[in-house]
Length: 193
Image (cartoon, rainbow, N blue to C red; front, side, top):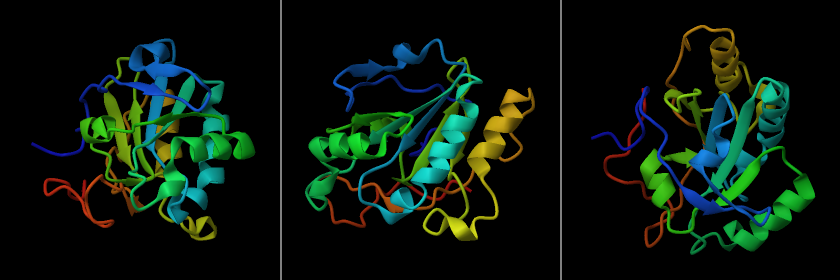
């Protein structure tokens, strides 16, 4: 069985606390025609250097009913700055246009098969996976970006087309798993393409 959700599979449910003081589950987004769930964190340079690309994409598609939800599943053993309190501070400072949820026990990262930070999952109105992988080809240095796969996938889907490239490999730091060395990944986790 693949570690990461496969195209066409349904989004797993969750119940996670958010930096806005509320808890959210999948049903809270039932009114959103498209749901983008992405695994992210506070410290990874692939995340922090591409946050403004993500902001632009989220803002560009918000009026078309695309909802962005960031999830931080990283263990704080090696990276204490990924704590829930630091997540709250980061959202206060950056005011990102997405919810920021904490997956303390890492069950959601395992259910979705989050490999890296960032790793994006796009679901249609039936919450079936239509795209997963990277946002762009150069998240650590957006000045070198030549393609924004996430934006392309959203544009195609919203235009009523099939996503021409539904799978890409996420580019970033691996998710930091509890009780494991910093670079560890589950044995069944592998490149998507």
